[in-house]
Image (cartoon, rainbow, N blue to C red):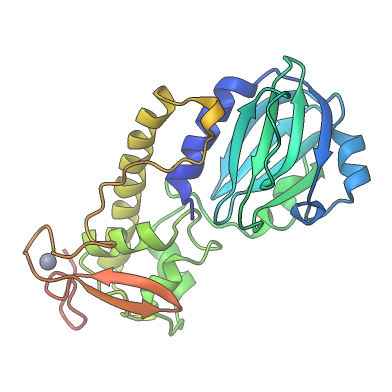
Length: 278
Ligand SMILES: [Zn+2]
């Protein structure tokens, strides 16, 4: 599943090809992708709209059009392709936008979990789903006190708490493991028990790890070939997730399931009872 860095990579790539383009026609082959619109209304609204900007909020892509905001969540397998109309449509391409330069922007999704929302311009941030999205990792308001307050009385493992998009936006299963490893925090530690120092460490590690992943994604953008699709996945240099030995101490990495999600940690560097604060 793409996390913040991958979605940011998709955003930057699409931006290079789509800004200033006008949508000439829309074809929908699987209507359930549309979360808050009928097919007819979606098509009618987007006809002749110009793409003015593409931004990101958490794991959401936002296409800013002249009169609308189009939100896209890739979920598990969503990808965007730029193709020529002559190219045969494959069965996983569910939404096609014909652009004024003759190219087609195709949304492909083998699992069909991705969703598109359409809002009148200027309203998307006040409505669900964006209304409930927490701070971006680099938001100045993201501070230890905020996390302490959010996690106060929450008897859930910190691994699960990090995946809650209403607290910090953009962290998924892979980077949550990486953040906890760098912060020396055991994934099962209850979020309510974290010290102020540990909260600070989580904020710093989140910024560092996601920032590095975004800059690695930059390499993908430069070598990007639009006809091969943009999904933002790139060679991730992971420290703990899906690894066998700890890169710091050599201990065998353990895999457990937390809240239904595969979780990797080093039992030596991330001790549960240890005073992990730096
Ligand atoms: Zn270790």
